[in-house]
Length: 113
Image 1 (cartoon, rainbow, N blue to C red):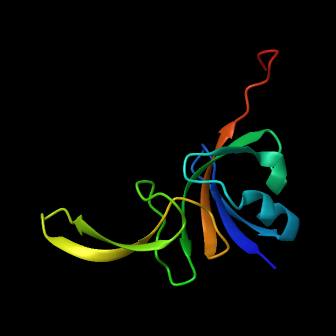
Image 2 (cartoon, rainbow, N blue to C red; image 1 turned 90 degrees about the vertical axis):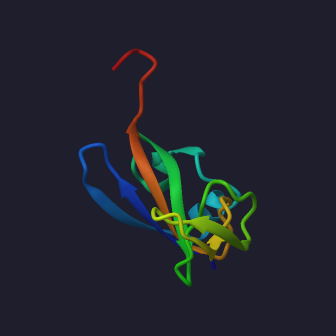
């Protein structure tokens, strides 16, 4: 059984958590950071959802510059210029992801509404 906690950020600054289970969660597997899906998939019609990130059960964040869904050890610099080896999860949503962060955009209707 696949289950994701989806954190939706709205344009007005509010956020909401939605639980996606089984069939809905299965449709999200294989998407990656930057992909867009219809909000009606998670019962938020009228919005387009853009995947902005996420994390796994251990708290390791997803990053867009790592392809695939694996856990990788990378060398990153902090704002002081100090380099550290840290674990990061790839940009692909897999069964090991627990939380998905999405940004909601108003859907533009073809008739201009």
